[in-house]
Length: 66
Image 1 (cartoon, rainbow, N blue to C red):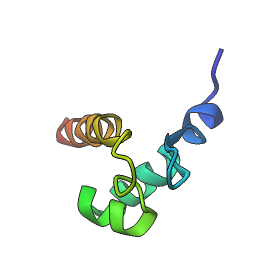
Image 2 (image 1 turned 60 degrees about the vertical axis):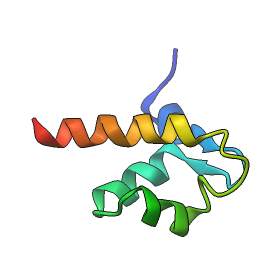
Image 3 (image 1 turned 180 degrees about the vertical axis):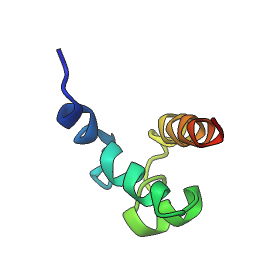
Image 4 (image 1 turned 180 degrees about the horizontal axis):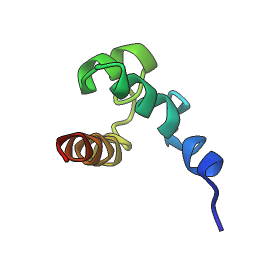
């Protein structure tokens, strides 16, 4: 069973070590995908996290609309 801390601390970008929680916090500050990438280094290495990060940001965007 995973906890909220486990989910928050989940590494989404292995190249930069960027966690789901970091991406969430930056998104909530109003940063877009490009700005989050510049700030964290996510999405700028091997691109293995590209789909996961994009889907996470899409879900966050949808949540804000409701």
